[in-house]
Length: 145
Image (tube, rainbow, N blue to C red; front, side):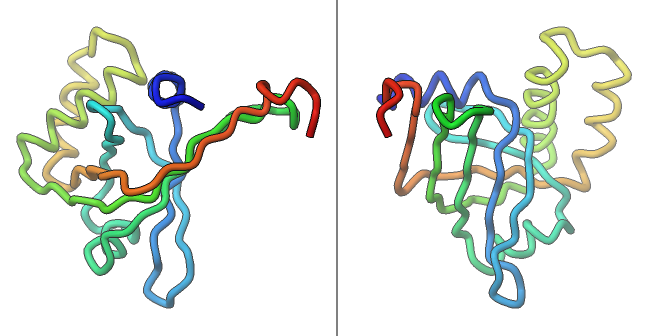
């Protein structure tokens, strides 16, 4: 994919798989909702989640976003990243509202807003700073593999 194609792909997809290194040295993979800010993926998760503990110990993460049911339709982006963990409650609240806006629509109801406000003190923001990228789009192969 070109940089523009990858940017559009990441903006339209809904789930990123985040791989961190667990406490026993094994990969730990978990799905996250996310938003794209500039050229970076941002997500939030619970401060006590295993992925947060893993990232505090080792900030490296590999992210993968993919789609496609048949081989000739597979598309995806894999990013090797350094992760910055953000704990400022106001910043985490803003990120949570941005994420819910993406997944529930532009107008957040009061119930969703109150839920985000209640969760934010227990959560962290994850800023994934890209170091290396790989992309694929099997639709461009024209049936030749």
